[in-house]
Image (tube, rainbow, N blue to C red; front, side):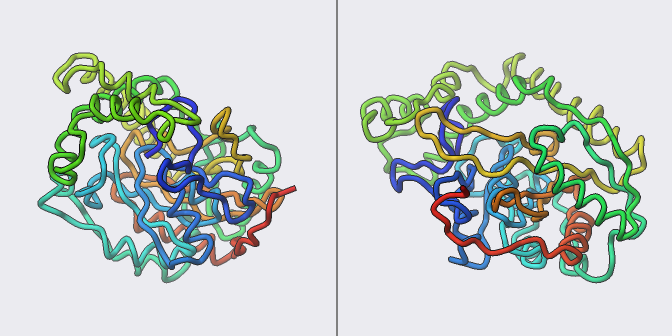
Length: 364
């Protein structure tokens, strides 16, 4: 998972090297689920299970021309997944079509005694969401603050909005949603939970490993710096290992502020104020040229509001910018996956925007 360094390159692994984007091999596949996205885009399999804490399903899915769904936290078990944050972590489908996403989600959703968060899981008939026209009369709010980062991306999403209007959706534009005020709080929550939860995972799933705590992982990386850290370090690991327990006031207050801003004052408020079924935004920018020296060069992302809230978020292919895929995001209330799948499927069937990759050496 891509949380080791402040200037990492998504998709780089000391074990396997660099994951490449099938649409332009010199460009990044984003992360953390880089390999899952690239493999499905390249037709190596029909579907993959991505994992997301903030963006790690929807960003690589968007950049690799896929459908990616980050479920409500608690809908899908995290048992066995290396933890970052029990507050935000979830697994979810990454596929080439909304129909495949619905089928995979139906297979993996539900309660699991080995993950207490799933005790309240509320699976629905996701395949049923694929029938009929779901856009007619749907009230969709445009998070306009996510625009303005790339004019060509904006043009693709504006065309998508016209498609939605043509299908009978009521487009409420703009709506206000901003969680940047808790960006540092979110990072603090993630690092506190990482250092607290990793030892239990290591004890159960890697009992013979030479490490048993995050501090030992940091020390091991230092001893193997040439192989493990040739391009970027482990600043976030080092910061996390200095933190205290989940009983500390700093952690509890940061988590409380995140939930307040992302839920009650954020998505819940916007949906209620405008009587919305879902929120719309560009998922992010097109894939950037991989630069191992300087690290990632993101073109913006809509992942944080639903990630911090723990709410569902689906991205669906909307078009291309210079041959690089761009995704449209639908996000909504907790347990609204069936609705979001229906909306995304109706949009997909009207546009058929996805095209398979050509494995070009570059996008230029």
